[in-house]
Image (cartoon, rainbow, N blue to C red):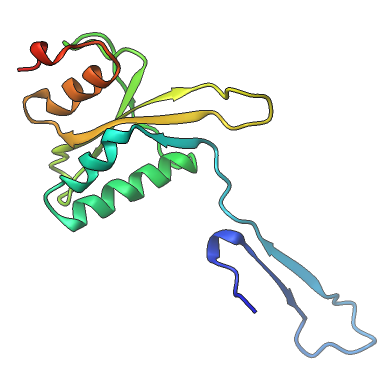
Amino acid sequence: MRRPSPREGVSRITQCPNMTPESHCSTTLRIMSPRERVFDVRLRPEVHDDLKNLPTHRLRSIAVLRIQNLMYGEERGRELIGTADPDLTGCRRLYFDEIPRLARWRIVYRELPAHRPRTLPVIQILAVGPRAQMDVYERAALRLGLLTPDDMS
């Protein structure tokens, strides 16, 4: 028999110690509910290459963990407001790094409404990469059709 993973949740029955027929202690059912997804996550095809191109396995693991946290609603990135070029208003960014205080890497994504009734809203991951020289933001804009390859620095 397959054991449930921690995310599937576990039901466990616990009894009071020294329980006798005269005692008023009852059997309790403790239900540990699984983490529930708040969003469906969709990766643009190019994002797989972005993740593969991160320089270390640890960075890839951190990026995937941060994306999972987005899916479960445990994190939410900062909104990108149209103050920079390219203008990615409506998108969000999430910082990550092996050294937390540095935050040299970004996940750029946008939140989209559910496309059908009774489905989850979608987080579309647009780009994962370095913040340096606005690289990750330019790639996200290129993938959204806001820039052409000639516009890239």
